[in-house]
Each structure stands twice: as C-alpha cells, then as structure tokens.
Length: 115
Length: 111
Image 1 (cartoon, rainbow over the protein chains, first blue to last red):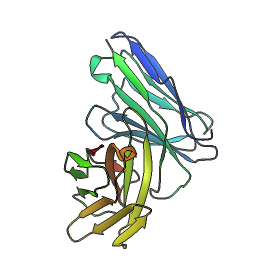
Image 2 (spheres, helix red, strand yellow):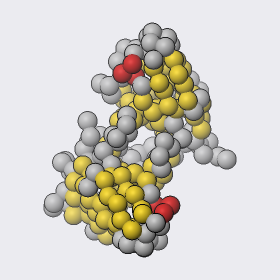
Image 3 (tube, helix red, strand yellow):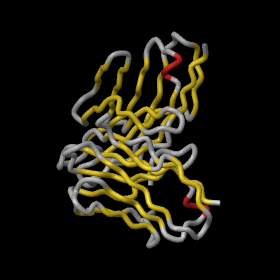
C-alpha cells in the first residue's frame, strides 16, 4: 500500500503526558498537512510543510504543539502536557503539488483520547 | 475557522434514490472539492471543480458550482448502502495556501 500512513491509529493517554504521532506521506509528495477533527466537525487545519519547511501554523496550534518534517519525508506531531480538550482525530494528508491547493491524500488518522 | 457550510447536516434516504447535498461558502475561491469520510476513517477525495467551471461529473457523482451564489451541490445518483458516509466540501483561494473544510453532511442510505 503506497498511501499515506499514520502511526499509531489509536492513543489513550493521561492528562499531562506527552504524545507523538507519525505520518508517512506518499513518496515524493512535496506537501504534508496536519489537521485536527472533533466529533461532528470537519477537519481543521493545523500546519503544513513544503518539503522540510513548515510554512504555516494555525492559531489552533498552541505552544504545546510542535511538528517537524526533518528530511522532507515523514513528519511528527508532538503534543506536550496533553489536556482533555486535545482529544480528537489527528489527520495527516499529503499533496504532490507545490502550487495552490489541489487534491490532498489523507491517512487513516490517529485517534487521541486524553483521560 | 470553517469556510464551507454544508446543508443538510444529516440526510437519510432509501437505497436507489438520489442524494443531494449543498455547500455554501463566504469568500471567493479558486477550487472547491468534495471529500467523503467513512466512520472513523480518513477522507477520500471525490471530485474537484474549479472556479471557472459550472458542472462536473464523475461516475454517479455530479457537482455544480455557482460562484455568484457562492454555493455548490453534490448529487449522488442511484445511492447504495456503501455511500453511507460524511461528505465535506473544501475550498481554497488564491490568497491562502491551504484548504478549508466545512462541517459536513452525514448521509445514511437505508436498505
């Protein structure tokens, strides 16, 4: 399967713990996006990378959130000192194009539950 | 923030019937896309329509775009049980280098 993959698929953690999610995009896709989705809502943009450069961060991304894409391939999203409000599905998507948005290819998501 | 607003929020129809979902947006767009999401899974791209296009077809899907009304519709003909999912519209603009999703329409196909 050469689609976007995310790991883990599910994560349960206690409030105050740190968690890290990984996303492997489709090979050679320049752009990689992170979204957060809560129940009954559409995905909300968090941040995106073009190759290894992080080009934009949403105001939703507090100081507790950090994302990296060190070699322009896979990406990690870390949440420090998790809060119950961080419980959500975290989606990763990649896109092959450099210019203004075209189709994005989504991974299956990581579902986070903070107790 | 969410740019698109889908209508209705939820829709239940009998298998074989056509399903129509609408999306309204607020600011000028470059492209509008529709995505499908099965319960608890990632999104799957269905169709993209550009701002200079008015209608597009893909299999049982028909999408229209009316930029004067800032609205789009997604028609699924001859619905099947497998069409049960949430459907989201997503827009992008020349000013902004990302796409913005609406809240979605939850479609349920009854056997």
